[in-house]
Every structure is written in structure tokens, then in C-alpha cells.
Image 1 (cartoon, one colour):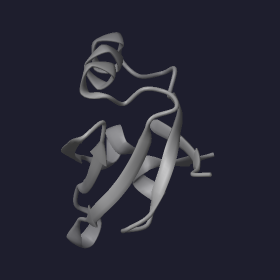
Image 2 (cartoon, rainbow, N blue to C red; image 1 turned 45 degrees about the horizontal axis):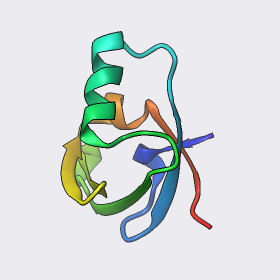
Image 3 (cartoon, rainbow, N blue to C red; image 1 turned 135 degrees about the horizontal axis):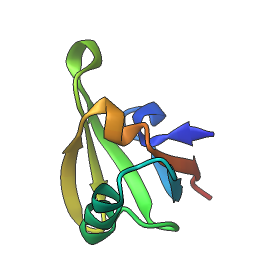
Image 4 (tube, rainbow, N blue to C red; image 1 turned 90 degrees about the horizontal axis):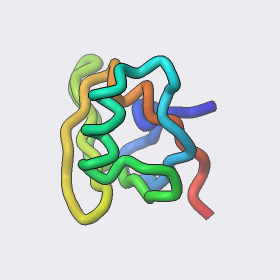
Length: 78
């Protein structure tokens, strides 16, 4: 399954799940930020040389490092 890290710039995906291996506090924080199943995620910018990815979710913009972005699983947007 693809993750937020894999979304090309300018494309949208839908959050399917968070990796079960994520720390419980990280999962709670991501949910507070709007990273919940069925939410749409738009990739606004990809970092240079594997740097962070900038995404929009729930009317907010976030920068995510690879480890976290790879733990947010997505499905193609309808």
C-alpha cells in the first residue's frame, strides 16, 4: 500500500490507516492534526534530496519527515 510519502506533488490521496507499529502518542497527535481515515491529503511540495514532504489535510498545512509520512497509509482519491 502507498503512503503519504509516495504521493506525487499536486496529487491527492485518501488516508486509509496509520501503521499499527507507530507509537501511541504519535498516533494520537496525528489524529489531532487531522490525519484520520477518510481524510483527503494533498501533496503540496516534495523535499529536495529526500527532505520532508509538505501536505495539506483538514484545511491545514504540515511538513512531515519521511519516517512519519511513510507510516500514514493512503488509497487513491476517487
